[in-house]
Length: 119
Length: 156
Image 1 (cartoon, each protein chain N blue to C red):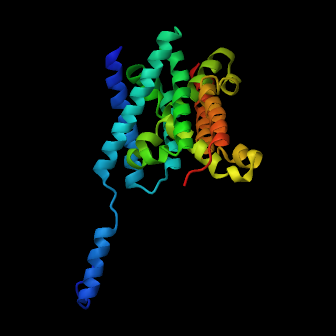
Image 2: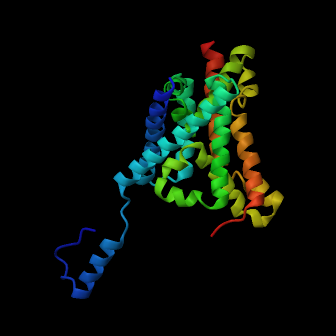
Image 3: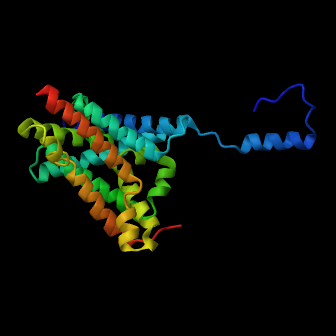
């Protein structure tokens, strides 16, 4: 790990972003479509066990792109389902993503209150 | 822009006009765009990794635990840059390099909230905040629900 992790993070984070840019340039999808598609893809790859391996390998290169949100939802649901059965899918869903959603709501709200639209 | 060759030849003015239009219509610079997206996406990942390591070392967390505050930090940075009006200026060059990482998620939340700010705190900021990012959460949760259900019913 240590410094090599930064190289892998750069390469994987860059590759995922580049894939998004290619989809934007070559198709008529909007950024909203791309983000949604990446989250779904991250969720499916998370269920298949591929995404956790990518996180292990590339660190923030895999956790920073939005696809990790889908993966984290799935990992939360699965790990809780493992303990408590089917109901765990509901109770564990936001176990790992609560940080991201809370941060987005709180920071988003405060910054929208403080700043005014530019341009 | 293939022209029927049997048609009447264009007048000088028309020819000049078509040439002008051809030169002006922007073609997305595919290579440049994707290289910039790669560069900025990679840069965001490096900054994220840096924060992950900081939290891991200073707060004695495991790599997995340290990812969460790092994501929150990147969301804060993305939200702040959007509020300052800087995000869009960088994103003009970075494209998906800033949109695909969580910074783009933060940007979509803050920019929607700011756009509807004049409709008030409750109905403007409060309800319109997730007008773009909401679909990410909806599709993410629905996907995760079915993936989790398949796991719970068939894998364990």
